[in-house]
Image 1: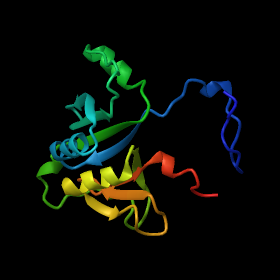
Image 2 (image 1 turned 135 degrees about the horizontal axis):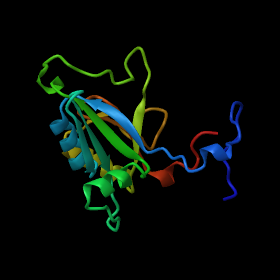
Image 3 (image 1 turned 90 degrees about the vertical axis):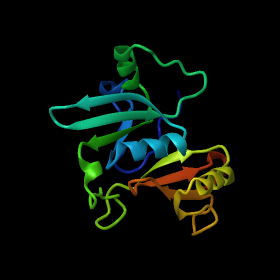
Image 4 (image 1 turned 120 degrees about the horizontal axis):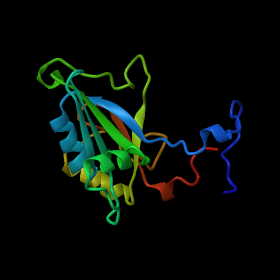
Length: 177
């Protein structure tokens, strides 16, 4: 591999100590797992690889992925757990038990003040088809691809109000400087 990343102030050369490290998942807290799972499975085609319950601490973790058709996932629960934690680009939905019954309960989306977390992102093969799919499924848009200064980028909200960026990779070659 000849490309070792863009160089910017603050970037340091990795050492062998980080060999084998990979980003496995990003976690979002969800109020109601049934509604969140319906959204991510129906709208984005994700499936649950593994659910882990922690009864003593009263929360559950759901690890989701958008699997390729030929991807082989282990059937054995133990092997699938190990396999899940060795993947790239998973979404972990964390449910703290009882939040689904609290009418006024909501998590901070990271984009309201004070800002913090921003969004997750999905790449799609056809942005217009994705926008039509979102429309037909009643997904809330923050921004359509033809709006704002940044064209060819869509932002929608999930069931908990988290922002999801949606892009078509081959439209982004000239993005930025």
